[in-house]
Length: 356
Image (cartoon, rainbow, N blue to C red; front, side, top):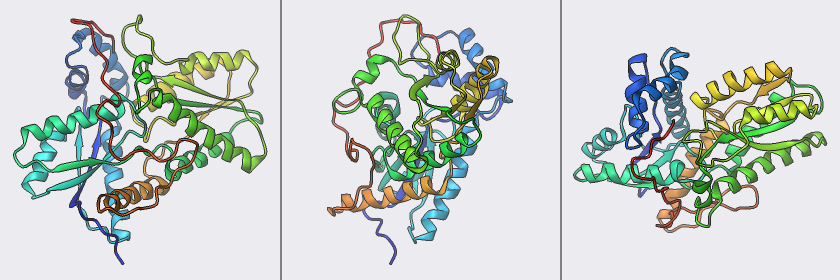
């Protein structure tokens, strides 16, 4: 028997977006930083990260691969829903995609966001993007967001396997550095319904991965949550320590190696291939510290199946049923609908000049 899809007649994949060629880099960064007063000269400096990879972000190709994998997974169980794709900062732009959905007669859809944790930039801002796009489109479809999935067994299980693989390439006694995107400490303080959700969720996910690896091997390891991709003016506090500073501390402590596990990311986009595979790897090499980087979920079968199952779960919940809500850790399954005061945006001083 095929799973029931009503009340949904489509699925939307919503992501950050990225440049496809060198000429796209500056306009893309201008989109990302619009309203922050950052001069083009600074954006061009940041653009060097992209130019070093041919001026093309991997994120769009990764989303294309995910769309293909989702389609195949939907077809396996007879889930007959079209899947659309829109981005916040680059083509295909969300507004254009929602306009296409409306023209196709889509009335209600569920959205998969390529961000697994609660925070303003990872959740509420995407909901604001959806609301802004809907205001521009007559008869725009109603769109519901899936619950946060970082503590779903499909997400955690994918990282368990990739972390085990990374550790197998390192000396005995290697540590684990769980890495995520840094955000302002003030943003973390108001993330989730009760605050501190961004850090709390990452710590819970890291603890579950660690516990499963210890169960398998009987070995206890040093583990830490660290951060990458800090931006913004230096006077604004952001979550620390930076991954490069942490690698230096590990080397000073005589740790024989480190598995770098990017639990804050669903695919190997720019923050992973530049901040970790390039900068952090260079730091580790300079220190003589053996380092292996665990893979992100990407199109791992566990991850793709999880997303499909969450679509089915949300549809059942909207029909008034009581579906199973798989999760691991101490925090329990996330909420379907965010409170109006959840993850509020940070207030920016007038004419504040930010670094990217």
